[in-house]
Length: 213
Image (cartoon, rainbow, N blue to C red; front, side, top):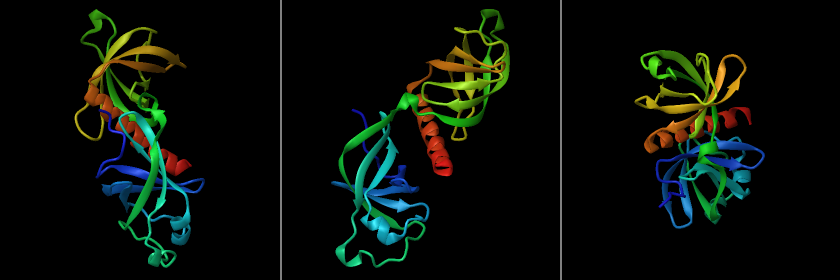
């Protein structure tokens, strides 16, 4: 069964439409709400935030999803605060079902990650090259430094990530970009590693969206 809602401990974005995205962590949940720990100070004034229509954006087993809602603030506290502090917690009351924004295989981020690739031919089995992944998704990556890429060739690879063991698999050259870049489509990657790739791509794309709007 697919996991569609955020879980306690997940990091996600609290979005003020057309204004800002605030990084938060799910501290607890219950019927119709999530308690969100603020990992950074919102720029939106507290009274405005409390009366705004908001959204949360998060990753689930299908990809990037969104839910609409508002802050659930007791009547006696509304409009009385001057701001939220670091690690303060707000209650987000959500409504409706998650809306899928982007399927997981299409969640893509710009990266610069070290990559080792093997030769395509049987007699090149012991030949490896040091390359770099330039963008990344759950379904493939753009590679710089793949020697003499040929459409249709398959290469073993080991991709270095900061969160643990390298991801090892196999990918097919599906496009060639300029003289030194090639798009690899994953043909053999363990499902657990695909989930790791998806989470890395989401986290990086999330941070890039926050920095560059």
